Image (cartoon, rainbow, N blue to C red; front, side, top):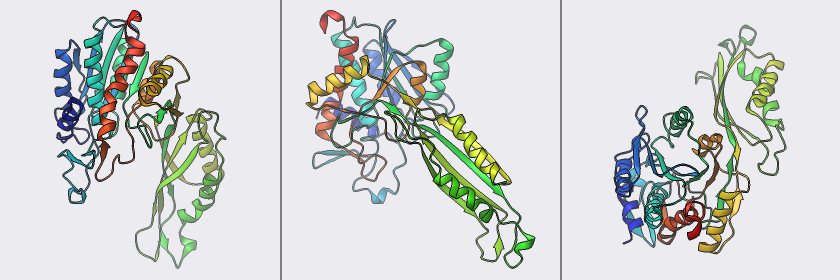
Length: 380
């Protein structure tokens, strides 16, 4: 088979369930070191991070990915073992086949091929990998970026290899992501017997009107780049499990996905005002896991669009949908950031897979963008 197939399979065989890397980064570091890359390992806690660079100065273009995967779920549900790469009907199956060991393999090969063809390329090209993208995302790219800030490390361009495509390779390029703001709310009441409600205070009843107001609120109208802010409740719990006890507290988890039409602090203030207006005895804790970002039309988007049109014959849709990714940590460094990777229909699912023809095209896509932005001017 091909080099991209062999390397993808080698990575899939490694049981790198987050936060473990299982030697994936060492394997890739050894390959890049042979091509003249400077290798730096940045471990934090249980998390492994790899920073491999070639060249000097600006501009700096980073290919960003992760070597960790989500758990397989029950292996008995898989048609073939999740960490034994298997080909069926023109597709490669295995945990991480799409998210994102194929992308990591393709980015590695693209860098090898690019520096082989252009050893005197412009600026610096780099690969940044973490084993903490699928987990808490605290000791991965987030911590690396803190290190970069101390070093005054600027990044000009970043391509994230997340599976961004929808129905065919290259049909969607993520040019931004919504922010994610989560809340853990506890509403306090007084536990008691259901036959004596006058001696208790039911937090479910007290919270009901506030809940209706929160879910009916229009937080913003969105804008040209992002849809309106979404408010969703993910968990709600109250009660002891028996039918004759008024609960003493209610616990609720909720999440905002918001674009640039709102700010996190404004959403927090509006929620606080609603709870205060309903005179609830409550405790509310917030977690802002990422601010929204948007890469507007410019050098990186132009290069990516040109390569997709040239190599794949389609015009990609610039989109800001989906969840969050490590791109949210890179964008605040001032970088132009896009996400470009394989189709995402099977990610995190049983029998995760990637089409072999899609896999074979990935390295050339990344190498094409590298050439557009980083090759010596006389060779473009």
